[in-house]
Length: 283
Ligand SMILES: [Cu+2]
Image 1 (tube, rainbow, N blue to C red):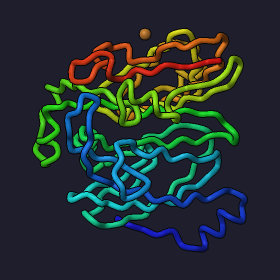
Image 2: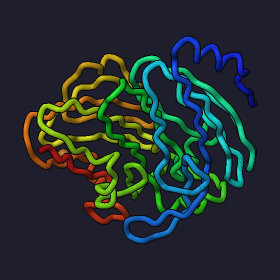
Image 3: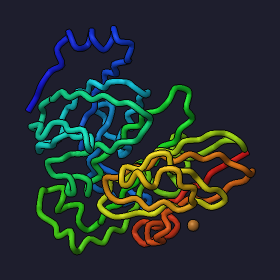
Image 4: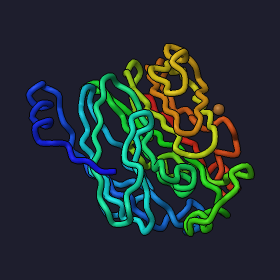
């Protein structure tokens, strides 16, 4: 199903003082080179027709509206959905669809393909929207895991048995340690006393648990359970298609690890430490 926002609604948003973000997102199929030099088929939502293994982070300000054009560059149909906010159920190969959303408070949302969500996420497809207050310092961890010996079946549209899922590659923003350290949107750098926000989405198919060394963070938003809001912790479980918004105010100088507490996730293809592992650098 497709629809186009009438121009009159655009004028209404503009005249009420709320910003309207116009964005285009492309569903791209490409070749991904793993940290240990394997090459796989991979799917990602990118901001251009050029494939990147990093699903684009859609960055908005509080009260923004998003008018989104979704281009399916893949050879099979996909949908587009912001979890909890609806979307487009199916977009044919080569076709384009339009959808729109509004946002109020700062928060983090998952977007994914609802048509074949687990299978397309098993090939890498799934990203996050971060809604922030103005002038906010934020970092982004879109985490997911993949099972290497399922990639070709998933790429050909063949069924897999999720009850036997045994992933062996673990990614932050489409990259593994140590490459992920080069991603300035992921690698937290700051100073003692800064207010730093970390937007986390789990766009994989397995639970993860993010463990900070050296610092505690406050949960500002949890898509899973609002009772978690306000808790000050150093370990943050996160299930598939859930999000967290954390606030870190560093109290000490240092370089400390942050990683998935499940140590298999700090590997890639059995090689340690090549998975969900970063360091925080506080001056
Ligand atoms: Cu730890």
